[in-house]
Image (cartoon, rainbow, N blue to C red):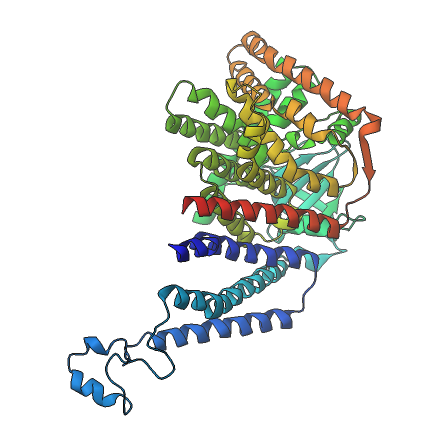
Length: 558
């Protein structure tokens, strides 16, 4: 029993978490520093060699051998005795042993502290270098792109729109061409939607780096390595093709075009049942599209530390899931409430167009709900680590250059690690409609998200944790009434306006508090971009605290 208690700090669950973190740490380190490939291959070779040698040695030791400890089971005892050194008898201790054998605890402890520790650390370093290698291999994906070979040339390209990103004075399109993906910066009008086929004429340019913003890497995250600035654009008819690949692509385009058509129709209904800026704020919380909010209001969201509620992230969707669980939990069994929450998350993901970022956020949200459903931090934390590992394995640039991924991961980590802790602190808040759970979840997520928000530069109020509790806690209600109002407005505009009236009142409450906290000049902390060394130190402390709580939880559940 003593041995088990001692090993619980290094249980299989904790080891798996450590190995996953090692791979993620390798990817993260490589995103900041250029590491010579010779060092990477040398590290993989050395640690891989140690692991292989340890495996071969263990296999050799596992073969049956003659020893005083197993001679008592030898069927031909006389032959066994004949193999022993002169003067030795079956079962007799060696000279100097004093007739005592080491206990199983001592043997296991020595094994753990010696060879096992070496193997474990070798695997940690091996996975760390594998993370670096995966980042290097992904960066070489530019070899599959042919547009970058034509930098500075005038070209005429045909392509299909994959994404449109509205900006205050322009619109950006991501277009799939036969030579690779292309970013197109154009005037606001005419507007194009997913699946539109365009003929684009202009100059192929390399994306530029603006100050601390590495625009090239931000685009490379989506395998975009080239751009055209204000080219000539002509819309073409979508032509059907007979080959199977084109037919599959056509079906895919039709499916996502339908989703985006529903999304666009829903957004139009929101603007009919809610005035501005309420409609854009509801759109941001529901679908991640902020519309055209006034700069002063956006600045106050940023200053109050609540800008993240306008980004479609795992945090927003998890809050919706928690609210749905609490609401249906008053009517149905807990398991049914959890399934309904997952169904609600799936519905919001489809409504947003089922883009890759939305799917990743939904996955993080389901993992966050798993923590609430199972009540086992180690289960949810391992699921989060596995999810992050597979996402980063698929696209290593997410870890450094995708703010949605960063917000989703950190907020979900905060929910898993600290939400139960803050639920005890917020015991004075009633549980009605999940108010206590929402407040605890908002505060726990804010603790982990705030350093990242600070690293983006600007100014923020030191009262932002309080602002998040008061503002973010009503996000689920805004999303509920906004969603229901938008849906019912398809059948009756008047009924949609009546239902959305509750969302209007709640959004007005949020706007008042955002402007209040954003206008408290004495509470503002002004800063440039947070130094990466300080950011790493803060998150190292948070992750260490998370690791301690994880091991403590794992020990109690073992």
